[in-house]
Amino acid sequence: MALTADSRIELNDGHKIPMIGFGTFAPQSYSKEQAKEAVMAAIDIGYRLIDSAFIYLNEVEVGEAIRSKIANGTVKREDIFYVGKLWNNNHCPKRVRPALEQSLKDLQLEYIDVYLIHTPVEFKPGEDLFPKDENGKVIFHDTDIQETWKALEACKDAGLVKSIGVSNFNEKQLELILNMPGLKHKPACCEMECHIYLNQNKLLKFLKYHNIVPLGYAVLGSARAPGWLEDENAPKVLEDPVLNTIAKRLKRTPAQVAQRFVLQKDIVVIAKTFTNGRIKENFSIFDFELSDADMKDLDGVNKNLRYLSLKSWEESPKFPFHDDC
Picture 1: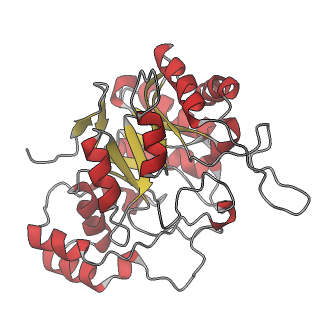
Picture 2: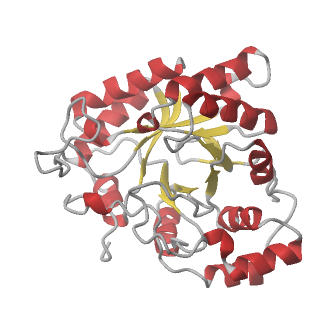
C-alpha cells in the first residue's frame, strides 16, 4: 500500500501513529513563541504527529498551539498524536506520574498519546534538570529501569497516556524491559537518531522482531547544538554527494530525499524546522518514491555517525552509545 500524508502505522497496543511528525526542539536562539507559531503552521500544513519533551521547555506553548487548532476546528484532539518524554531526573518510580502530570498540566491536555523515557541515563532525582557536583560533572543515579517501566505501565493503566515507549535505548537496555518479570505493556515504540550516516540497520532488525515501531529524529542530520557532535568538521547529511545526485535526478530537495529514505525503511520520520517554507517542503515526501537501487546507494553511505554524542554522559553506567552496544 502506497504511503500518503495520512498514513499511520499500528503500534503493538493497537493505537496508530502517523508516519511523519513535526519536531519541536529548538536552540535557545528561538523563542518559545516561535515554537508555538511553528506548531500551528505544521498542523495547518497537515502534520498530525507533534514530537516534544519536557526538557524542551516549551510544552506550554506547544499545548497552546494544539488547543488553538482544536478550538478553531482545524483538527480534533483524536487527530493529533502527541509524543512526550520523561526526563532523566524523574526515573525514580515515585516521580514518574508527577512528571507526566506536570506535562499534562503544561499542555492542558487530558492525555498524552505516547510517553517515552527520554534517555536510559538517569540523573540525581530532584528539581535540578542537570545536577552537577562541585567539579561540574553530572551527578548520575541508578534506579532499576524495570521499576521506572512499571511506573509508566501504571500511568498507561490510569489513562494518562495511550502508549509508552523509550528513546535513545540500545538493544541490551530494551531487553531489560522486554524480559522483566510481570511485563504488562511492551514498549510500543523506540525513538532514535536515524539518517543516511546512521542507518541503524542492526537496531531496526531488533525492533522489527519485537514489533516495536521505530521513530527517527535528526533525519536531516542538521543538529549542531552545543553538546552534540564534537567534531564541527563532521560531514553534513544534506551535502552528501550521493544524496544530492539522487535528489537532482528526482527533482527533489536533498532534505526531501533524506526523509523519504528513512520513511521507506518503515521508520516514522520526525523533522524539525521553524521556517514555514521548509515545514511545507518537509511534508511533501509522499508523491515520489526511491527505487531499490536508490535505497541501496543511500544505505551504502552509512558512517555510524552520531550527531547526538552526549559525550559528557559517558561515565554513566547506562550510557547507551558505547561501541559494544
